Length: 102
Image 1 (cartoon, rainbow, N blue to C red):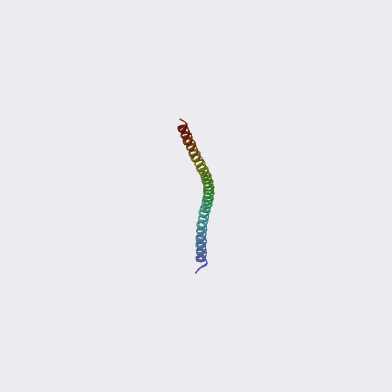
Image 2 (image 1 turned 90 degrees about the horizontal axis):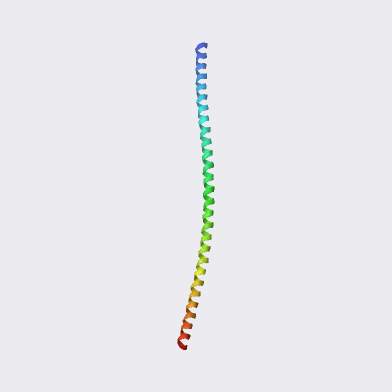
């Protein structure tokens, strides 16, 4: 192999290496964009998870308030039922007393 052949072959190798470097740079650029997108999407998913957790906490607090209000309403209804029974009892006694007098 002559010197000129070796130079031509070396130029070919250098050209091939240059093309490979360009492709590697393109891949690195694409990978950087993908990585950036993945980071952005991961951040969005994390924010969504935090919001969902906060909403679940709010819903739990709301349910606790509703349970407490229901318990209070049940107690008030029971008190009203007792008062109604006492009122009916008192009315019955008054009617009986009035019938005995009259």
